[in-house]
Length: 464
View 1 (tube, rainbow, N blue to C red):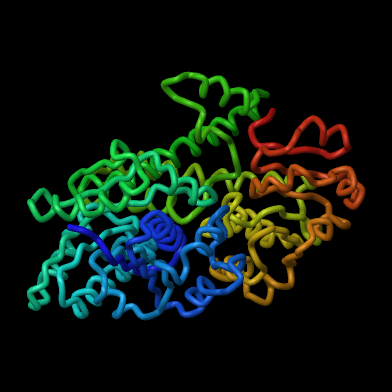
View 2 (tube, rainbow, N blue to C red; view 1 turned 45 degrees about the vertical axis):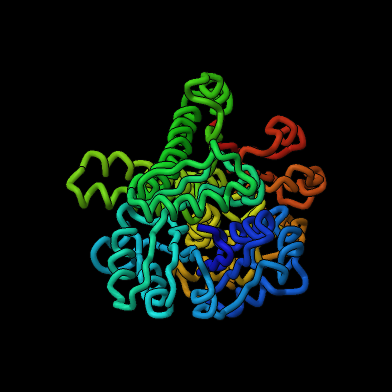
């Protein structure tokens, strides 16, 4: 089965970059990325590729090379479905905010809407690929919807979870650790699997393309994110212990990471993990375990979230305590709003919750982030619904020049590990601040001793 036309429903952080890479590496395949969000599609089609809706190093160059050649962005969803041999579903699967499973289960309404639209439009056989992160056995529900249309079309369901990391998406797609493809253990299922294997084989070594059954593939994505988040929460729990015992969490992390059985990755203490995947996927895993009556399993994984929330709260609380137990009316510079460097994604960013805590204490916060605009920052705070939008805009200011954030500030907090922060003229910034000048490094990216020599009173996670 040779794939000549691919449609991807969803032009977000996964769909956009993934389809761009497929288009770049498979010039004989037409790739249509469709979305009902007109503004998002307009941004993908902007002549200035620096204005793409997603910031990822290297992505704009790939889009410029492929767009309107074999890569197209459009709101013509039904037309793209009809033309496609293979349809990727890459829509949002947020945590439910209502009903059964509220706060834990994945909300699959967008997935179901996609399935019903495909079923209504398709008149030829299609391979449907789950690209969104989904609960185990979602493919079964998709299959039931698609197979009951009565129009005689055959649908094969594949699970192809994404393992790219935001900020390194292009390099992850170009050189993945593995590509996982789950399919039904039938002859037609294996043919569909092979069709997708052949697409990736245009640039991915075949030994890195793993095939499994659908259920193993769906569960592997959830558990991969859970394991990574678990390591972050584990080192963060030790950071608090280090602070009270006068140990150094950086030295502890280096020591344990030198053990080949453990390894050094994801052992950097921080103010906490964010992003669209870790928390959502762990909560989903907890809900699935609870649904099957596996209380101890659910409790185990829920603790990862509890520790992450605790780390954000205690960092914000430390700022207040250090500034003589009050930040009311005090100006605090916040460096970074994105949940990690090299992305403009702010979903579940630790900065949102730290700043929310400070605003509740009546601090005057000034935010600088090189890639996140003011509209997004205010939207993130408004979504929490802790204060009115008017109060958020009264207490928080967003600046485009980091030096403005430091003028007459009492303290600064680093909440995203942007590389440019390391190259700031910290001597000059120190002179702009009120004395004593406090610096809270929630991402451990600066030279602790050098900044103390300049005169900063430093607080760095995990140092006694």
